[in-house]
Image (cartoon, rainbow, N blue to C red; front, top):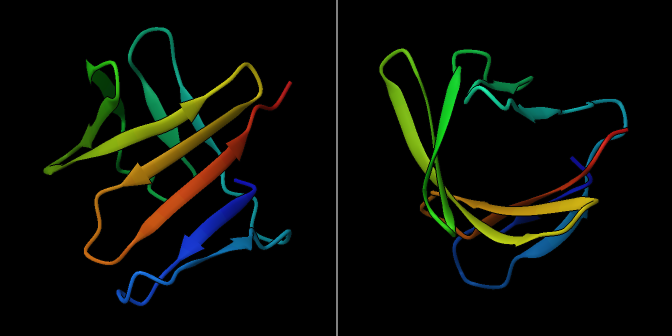
Length: 92
């Protein structure tokens, strides 16, 4: 993860660089497996449609919106009450 949108709910959020000491990584496997270093209980994903991914594991399941996807970056908007977003860079 390279940055996160931090918003207290007033719509005036700011993108903040990710803490370099906290190296959050997500992996989407070709077999629908999912790994998230911050949420190890999440194990699977499925594409709901062209813009939405549902991740699940155990009794947890939630949807994320794909804001943008390029060969080297992914911008996600998870479901949350306040404004939020996450940007990731592809690791090679």
